[in-house]
Length: 358
Image 1 (cartoon, one colour):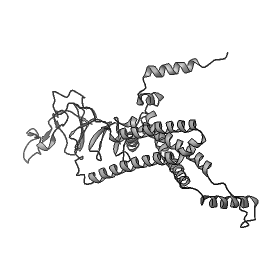
Image 2 (cartoon, helix red, strand yellow):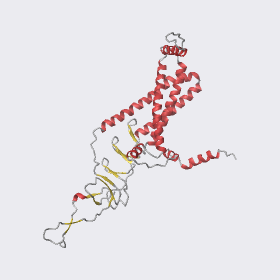
Image 3 (cartoon, one colour):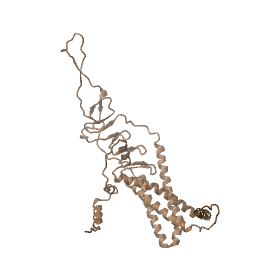
Image 4 (cartoon, helix red, strand yellow):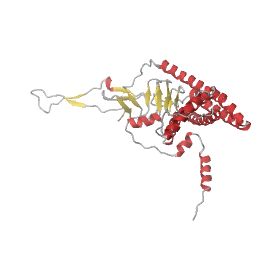
């Protein structure tokens, strides 16, 4: 509820004494104690409030004050910071290992097929590796986006409604808008914060959200490429399966055939070179990473399409706010920075290709 910077004085009537007439009434004006006077952090005006008002909104500037919110001592900051840096180093080493082992295990076989095929695949590998590493570094080490500075603390500087729905961050000692959240792992307020990702050791916000999405797209495409190529090369170098008849199970012909092929496969693994085991690891590792990152990418694109972030979705669910955002593909276009005239030309070109039959 809104409170103005003035409040009417309350008058109370004193009790009647014995022997006095009803006409002789004494009126007393209740004085306002200092406990009821609170200075708004946004505009500096004095507000007259009830002592049982922990959260209030200034009637002039619109700033929200929460007396229950206090700065807490963060004892685990350095532990979280060390954890994030370790995750970044491990992921960089993992990506370099995948690239190096893939080049060592795959491309001798690819070049043996044809020189043109080997050069083509090597070019694709270089492009995917460079894009994945560069977008990961940008997402990990670029600032997630600090909120723009705004005038506050003085009545002449702050106009009416200038700090509407703004809260005060006790950690950064400055205002924060509804789309700004404070990250205790990064020790800063982040504009349009989506979440804090320990795998990049950074928050995902307005400054690096696009780099984070581009990294997910590049990583999903790269792992899909690695899984396909490693499976093809493993099939090319796999030792031939020898037919080993068995009489362990003779109840069904299908079971017998499957048993024979299983024994043949297990025996052929014994003659598989080291390059084959590396290819098996590359295949399963790339498929598992591809599934995980694909689910995360799909979730992120849905939030962008709905014009939301992960934190805004959580806050709307917890507050019971069912406000429907505008779901439009233009949200995706604006997020990736494509100019509207270019998309309009593309749409007009697409519509011009359609033929209508009468």
